[in-house]
Image 1 (cartoon, rainbow, N blue to C red):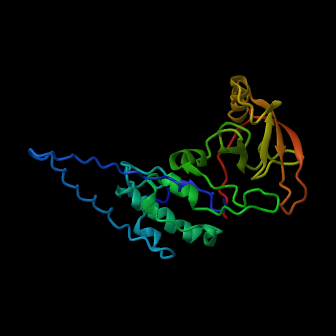
Image 2: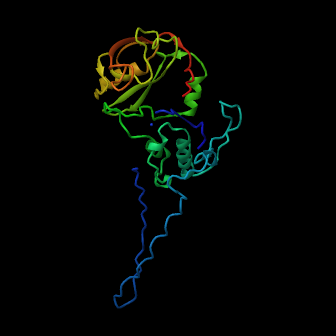
Image 3: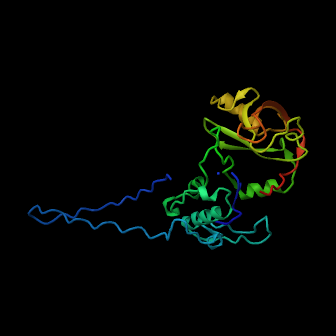
Length: 270
């Protein structure tokens, strides 16, 4: 897995059970009704080399991909460095990279990467599961972003939007939609109380974020992904959480107008 293939927030985010089915053909004996021979046990899986608490450098596994990309990386102008790898290579990269860069690296439960068939499932475990005094997740920003989508956003092209990037941490009820980042001098920040990273969406145009009717879902999508034909929407926002140092949580209504062109996101260094 290439380090740039998925953009991860640094201060932010098994049980996948792998079942191997072995079919054994019973061998019928000759006359006399003898018992079939007992089949040999299946061979053990190849060792993964996993040792809890022992990490190889992330560079050992970087660019080793199950599906290597071909062509030119638009971010560098150079050929993609990807080479053929395995799911275990991708998982090992995530494990070592998280240990190197994650703020709460010492709160990650170190699990054998060979036990996960999907790197995204493994990534979901590479986080702290601690909560704050209010019961909120300490890490509210553990998610992935496709690298090509991020590159396209980061190029400064103009598009319709509020100047805030919303992330669906949970797209199913109970939904969790928060602001991942904002852009300066945009509708999202030119407010009496500007939107900020971590602000939580409660309603859009009066529709509760957990409305599961088709009309409700359509209204929520229209607000989260505005069009030039329908640019104005009203958001009820939980601006601050009780455990944050800025004070009590504030519920505010903001009318956002996506009609103005906006630039790509700013790069935040954490």
